[in-house]
Length: 369
Image 1 (cartoon, rainbow, N blue to C red):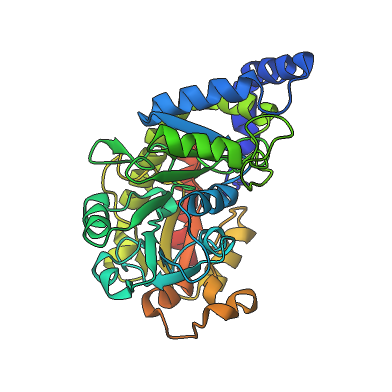
Image 2: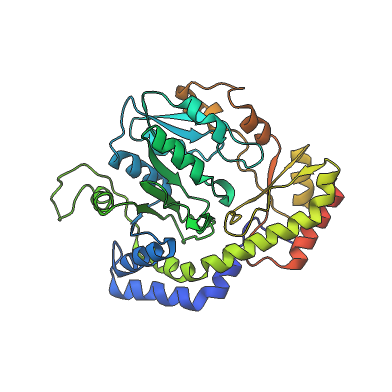
């Protein structure tokens, strides 16, 4: 078999008629920027999230940047973020001039260690940015309590967890903003870059609508500073089709994760492999199925030779790389994040996977060991 990490081709074939129709409508109308399809998606996604306000933007990195900027953050301000995250979380903070302050991960969840957040808070801390990594919802009860105690904003990074819930409430709706990515490989993916923001108030939503469009509410008038970050209509057209299937796809991802765990449990019992928690279908939507193995490079090589594409999310923590040396962190700063980065391995997971593909992957993994 040849099994990719994510198979976007098979998904397109299943949705081809609907997607082609929506894209053709955009092309026929020539309404390519902030058109009717964008407005429809903003309404539909708000309804899906059970939120009052959603604003489409160009990508999730811009969403994070706009969120912190709209809240007034800048030079000398600090934002708490997890050390174990994609670099975009830090970039969103740094684009405002503020400084990301990192907190190590919980080794069981891969999410920010809730017990270490308060010790990282200083007089300069203005916000907490929990990241619902790999599709797993953070404990928003604890984070909200900490934020309230210290009068901090909450900006959620939901780039990998669209549709997940924490205690029946969709993640992305607990703070001032929720920031979403529609990069093609995401659970809800466009056919290019795309993003959105949920906002907790009409005032904040209105501000973002202006800031995403150069700071303009009326053409050629700029009462505030902004950037160019607009969700285009073709991407919205694709998202309008896919959104209808998101809950169904997320449940399928969870079922795949459960099958993986059942098949690979014997390896975990032998101490050969570490599995993620299978909490429940709403708390974890399994954007990624991440295990830990020793001799990872050898395992990846064996899988590749047998037609299986695996990934690493992420092989080198971003704060240890040259581009982010200015943050001042050195090796050993976050031992749990660094230890995991040497062992984590992402197995293929997408809603269209078959039982035979799962059996082939788990069987090949057993042979590898």
